[in-house]
Length: 338
Image (cartoon, rainbow, N blue to C red; front, side, top):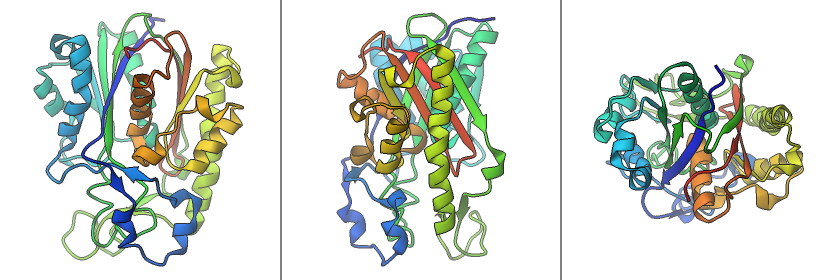
């Protein structure tokens, strides 16, 4: 069945007031990793509040969708997919609680833990598949990044080179089974050979859930950072160009290119690889930092609200995850509400 699915609308939420880099410089250490282009910090980022849960952030990201489409539209969703960088409860995902707050009772609820920075496109692909193969007609996808204000401000972590780079935020999108803003194509690729190159560690023998010394954080070595940088430079354009070829559009003719937002050099290299000028590749890094999975929907929403996405234009999304174990791209004929 080749039923068309549309990305009807996007919305986002950024918690609290912007946090400047000065917050981190007072704790910074002499660290050669800080000179690596992967860890050059944004001007500002946002941090979720100490008592602000991932579901709180998701609810606030969805609020503009409710304002524009009505509470009943969200209550009637058939499919709900969520991705949370740091689940509030490691046993229970965010989906059921978010559904309860929306007054919804979806037939399909999935908490998608993998996909990393490409999770938004991954969820688009999954939602599209469910809508095309079942009687479901609407889907809500939510990507929440909530580790900046929790993990990266810990006393042993906030002085590390990577600490100032992430920001917190949440993005949401409403998908429907119609042709109003069609998803033209999606490409998802898994690279299992790279799955072990990123670690979440306490920098001790302690497992992250065990009591004892050491604070948990994503761990990098200089050699692994070099490998990840090379992979990211290659993977994002690869999947993006595959989608361009399948929809019959040259990359340089894409109207808007939206990627995850890990650092300035990746952003420059990616639009150069697609032969696109920087103005067609929205950049929210200096405002929001690296939002991981939330980077694409937040950037889409901010760009759309600023009038940067014309209805009928082709918007290309692309991202890679973790140390390069997953990459995904999608093309949309834009038609979302402004």
